[in-house]
Image (cartoon, rainbow, N blue to C red; front, side):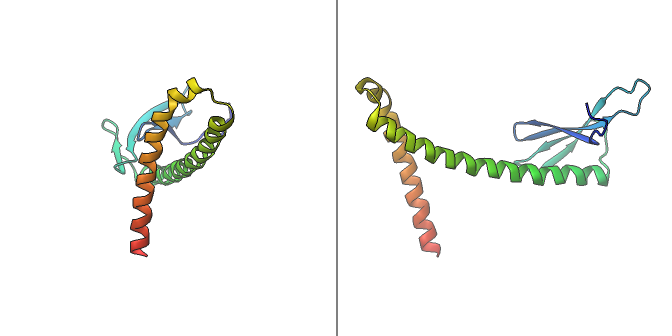
Length: 133
C-alpha cells in the first residue's frame, strides 16, 4: 500500500457516502479510519457523525468530493444512455436476423411497451423544448 494516503476516505453508498478521516499517526502505525460525516448527494446534506464537529477544511474537502462525484455520476448517466442506444440497435439486428419465433414471442410485448413509453416521453420532451425555443 502506498505511503501517501489521502486525508479522507469516502465509502460510496446509495445517494452519497460515509466520510472517514484516515490516520496513520499512531503507535502501531496501523491505518485507522474514524467516521466523521455522512453525505447525502440527493439532498446536498453533510451530517457530522456522532459528536464530531466538522472544521472548515473538512467541510471544504467534502464539498469538493460532492462536486466531483456529481459530475462523475452525470457522465455515467449519459454514457448509460449511449449504451442503451447501442443495445437497441443490436436488439433490432438480433430480432431481424437471429431471433427465433419463440424468442420473439417471449420479448416482443415487453419491448413494444418499453419503446412506446420511451417514445411518448421523448416526443413530449421534444415538443416542450420546441415550444420554449
